[in-house]
Image 1 (tube, rainbow, N blue to C red):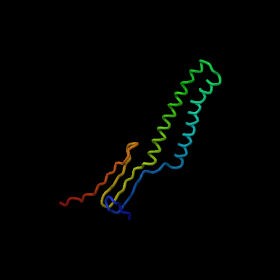
Image 2 (spheres, one colour):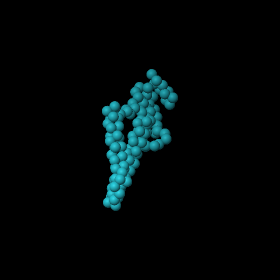
Image 3 (cartoon, helix red, strand yellow):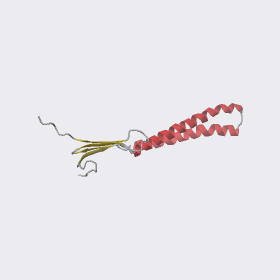
Image 4 (spheres, rainbow, N blue to C red):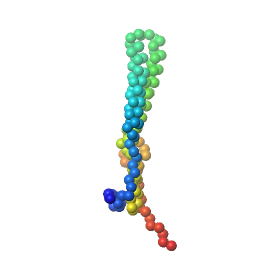
Length: 125
């Protein structure tokens, strides 16, 4: 049985958060690709139209550029948050002498929240 440096107790069971399966990662990649295409069209097309056919009426299309930049900003923030969660997964270990948890609760923290507890024997009456 593996030992730990914290409790020096044999491990009974270890549970850690699972990585997303291949289907979910593929679906997220496909959604990210389509979002990138939509952002490129929202930002690029109004600028292209203003360069090719200059008209004061085309200034109204700049609202699409602003919405494309906002969508890009939100998508990048969501991808960064998802990547952080993929790299920082919580784990829980049950040992003969107690339990240990390592939890990553807040995005961007430097160190996990780690708790180690020992079992107390039952009181004898």
